[in-house]
Amino acid sequence: MAISLTPPGETPPAEGCISEAHVERADGGIWEHPVFWAAMILLGSLVVAGYFIARIFGFT
Image 1 (cartoon, rainbow, N blue to C red):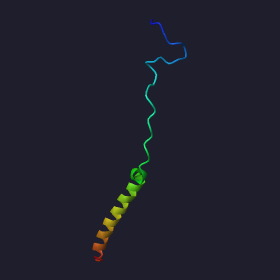
Image 2: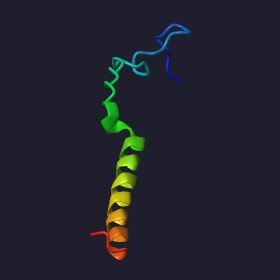
Image 3: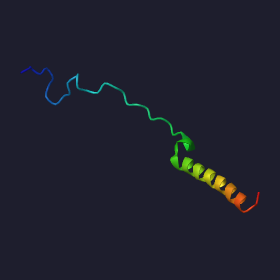
Image 4: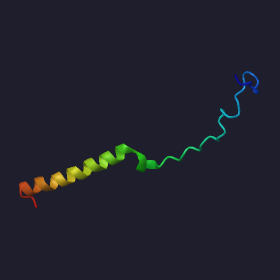
């Protein structure tokens, strides 16, 4: 069995975390929110559906 050179209660150098904490990325605003994109897709589909409904009833 190997002899431990690290005092009890301390983390050995090979097992410790040597990296720094990462910096949180800034919020990307409205472009990163899925509700915005879902609303845009829904609005676009309603506009296209409205166009075809208007064509069926002869409004255009």
